[in-house]
Length: 571
Ligand code: ATP
Ligand code: MG
Image (cartoon, rainbow, N blue to C red; front, top):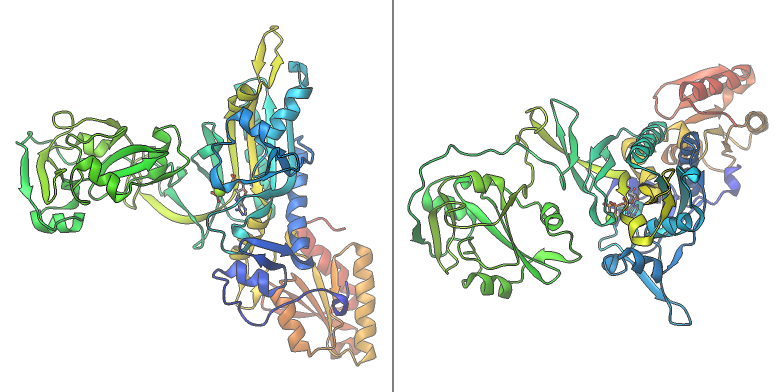
């Protein structure tokens, strides 16, 4: 491609509304253009990268025997009603009606659609297993679209679904996808870790997220420093830390005017936060939920929501609800005598003696409160892990890092096949539900994560495997025929070799060209300047500072070597 003819609206300045590096660089490199909040159009430089990511995905999935299909982006409501998700998806789902007032949605994900396809075609165990995928635009009315294409209302997702006759088959399919994802992200040069994840609204029990460690990540990941344990904060567990058991003391109500927070309690009573329990009250789809965690802990809302079987709306209770449940002003909630639809007690609170809690009476707290004697509830793990907690697998120290989720794999089991009647006749003659898995990768988010890991102060540093173009040729002075002629020749030769090559034939100063080519991150640069009279050009890699003078006859071999080194196929 000749750069004089290209549509590449680059920006010199950092766009004011772009908070993170990948978003800034995608805008500056002219890859994407914003149309509305969370809605972007993809320009040539962007689309080429997104297509490369897609191609890597296709190749790795085909190696595992997956087949590509393409489903409709609009989905009739009936399918979602069959699975029970029409009412569960909430505001994130874009809904619409046709001229006959029939309900549809813009597909946010396609479990129902794939299940519907398979139930119509598959009758016998002989037709299974199957693993189908698509790469398609998804629509989600995200509450907080942000960070450019990291979280948008419409994005390209590879979503795949496996169909097996039994759990063993699913385990194999899941393992295959685990390996395929590992290979995909390795080829994208994305350092990532698979972590145990919460399965959320999609259902199923086992799932792993592929997380790219990054300061800008919206997820918190818990890692063990001693073993391979890694889990999303939503799901992560740690060893209980309980104070030594004491003899139960007598309940002791204390007048504590104006003392609300754990900090204020510590000061008032002169003891540390672990001696208290916090009582939090939530509203979940119209039900009230009380949760107790120790004073030094935070509630893990995902664990609580899962404990009630999931909730569409899950929020801290409104003040009037708190007042009604506790008969007191906000800030004095406690477990004794509280009436709620659900009461959950974190294990550490249940195991501890003589806890301090709110008195359910304005300006009162109570000391020496003991689980079992003074209050009751369902005991479990309802807290967040914090740094310094110990690993439940090996006892090692847990650490916390931020991460961007680029891919997610789930074992769905028979949730959808049972709800939607997707069955087959097994070789014992019995009708059984198909056992399913589902597997997703966000294409644009993956590209953004690559930029987060591969950039410098001058711009993007694309790994060769996903670069929009692989080589750029820069004639230093387009007024000099010896520069332009030689550049044209190299350009043609490289094209014949199958290299994706740019010729920077723009009438610009060479410094401007270098800046642009660094910004857009082209991995190899060949500069044709004064040394061409001796048959030499300058060769430079985007990710290295050194430049070398090489002979014209060496160019091909030098470029080929880079392809080999990066494990990228030519042509
Ligand atoms: P998140 O927790 O970030 O909202 P999710 O759990 O909703 O993600 P999945 O439904 O598992 O995501 O979707 C599969 C993949 O699609 C994700 O791993 C991510 O790469 C991508 N993805 C999901 N939502 C968005 C979005 N709003 N914008 C861009 N990519 C997205
Ligand atoms: Mg989401």
